[in-house]
Length: 93
Image 1 (cartoon, rainbow, N blue to C red):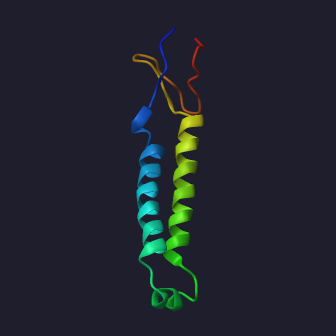
Image 2 (cartoon, rainbow, N blue to C red; image 1 turned 90 degrees about the vertical axis):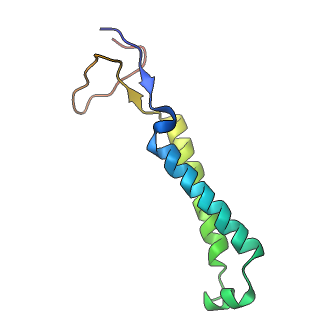
């Protein structure tokens, strides 16, 4: 049975998580760069936690988006069944 293989697209959870990490990463990076005073840094043992957490979240966001882009989830076509452990590959019967 030949059917078209669809991808999950924007409904892929990795895109949603990447977007959330990206938004929070931008907010924390901005807070760390422009709105963290020396008292806050002193309380954290001399580390700008907002800045480093924001940068780490931005890296995670890029990794999630790259993972979803390079390895998209393939959905079976209507009427096509997939057993547990099988994968759907484009262009195969």
